[in-house]
Length: 131
Image 1 (cartoon, rainbow, N blue to C red):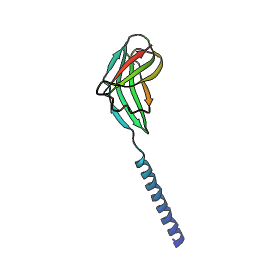
Image 2 (cartoon, helix red, strand yellow; image 1 turned 180 degrees about the vertical axis):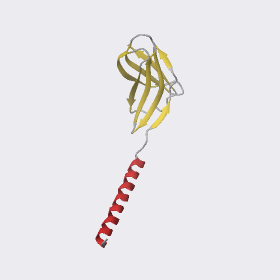
Image 3 (cartoon, helix red, strand yellow; image 1 turned 90 degrees about the vertical axis):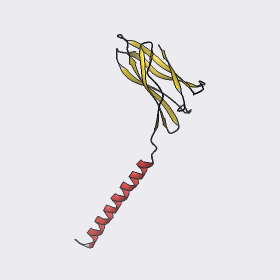
Image 4 (cartoon, rainbow, N blue to C red; image 1 turned 135 degrees about the vertical axis):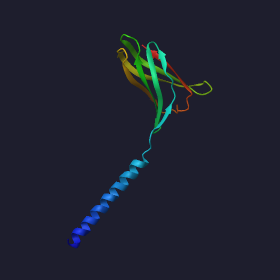
């Protein structure tokens, strides 16, 4: 091989290594969301709410739950009302998670509500089912 081809191969390899290193650093620096478990299972009006979790990402707090119809018939849910309380039982905020449809028996769907206020320190959540 002549010197030009060898030099081009070396430069190509170095460029590929540089691209990989830069990509790795960009991915590594991207903040991962923080997760906070907050909710025990609750049953309200034939609706079971489980797996309550607060996800904090980019200054936004999203509360997510799984919603299951435990009745043996269709069960309409307009939305869920989430009331967050701190350790001293003071209300932090009230949020709504829209569903707006009937759930089939034993059907499970996710519901969530987001806010830019810190709710990760909430001690408990009261959930109301709005029909």
